Length: 200
Length: 157
Image 1 (tube, each protein chain N blue to C red):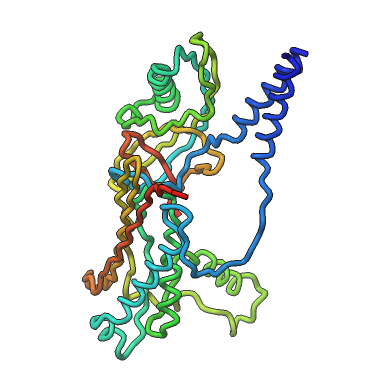
Image 2 (image 1 turned 90 degrees about the vertical axis):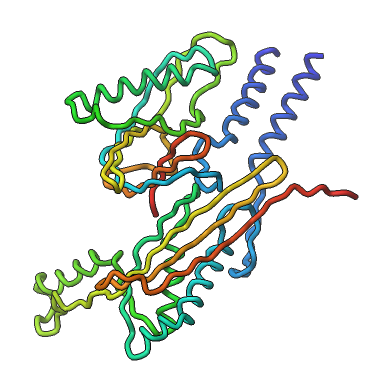
């Protein structure tokens, strides 16, 4: 009897042990493929949000007027994440600003790299290592004319059979001098997860 | 024989507890009531040993005793008395459940965060210490009021 318990408990231990050490396989996949691993904010949502916002901004008649004769300078303020999820909103703004830069209609200043730029200028001016006639000067940077900012909010509802997540991403472009919001748009995403009853 | 049986059983229990994830699941879409944005003014890691009578009313005793101690320690001077204190989302992953209904001493690792939100208001939040997210002074944080009446502090990206 005791032997039986011993054998069964050891084999159970082995099963649990093998459960913890899964064999993993690595593959390359399509970076733009639709990802539906779970209901939480994922790569497809990020791509959808960034793509729709950029398209909307570039085709807007107001922005068409702004960019007719000049390339406005924009700085990106952070996106306020109002969801329960720990989402890298900087990654969303990175995607948007990259697409806008590539359109050739805008120029950007990067506030996240101000300190690094200052250190480099300080090195050029004060280290004695750089030819003074060729060193970059302090006080020559160009200020941003517009600010891009936004919010990401979610509404989550669930019961025992179904979960529903609604994301709303709002983006706005403000004229820093006048304080006017020149452009705004929002993208919505709805994701649902239902239990499927499989029959065979 | 019995020893072997016991040891294999304890190995089983150990494995189960190892597989269980004690950290916050910060990537889960759950209902939120509101989110405040702010900055960490001070961080203190606490290791609190507390007598827990049972699983059901243990947290209340624990919370009350702990908050008193913490405020007394750090803000004995006066200004801190006005600070709203919130016992955050303590998931209790690090606390052993009391199966035998007997008083038991447990040690819990917590983090006490003093936060100034963008409106200027200050909050003191105490929540589980999470290895995945370690807070420092001047970190930009989000104070998330979850729909289940708890508050969780996350770093802003």
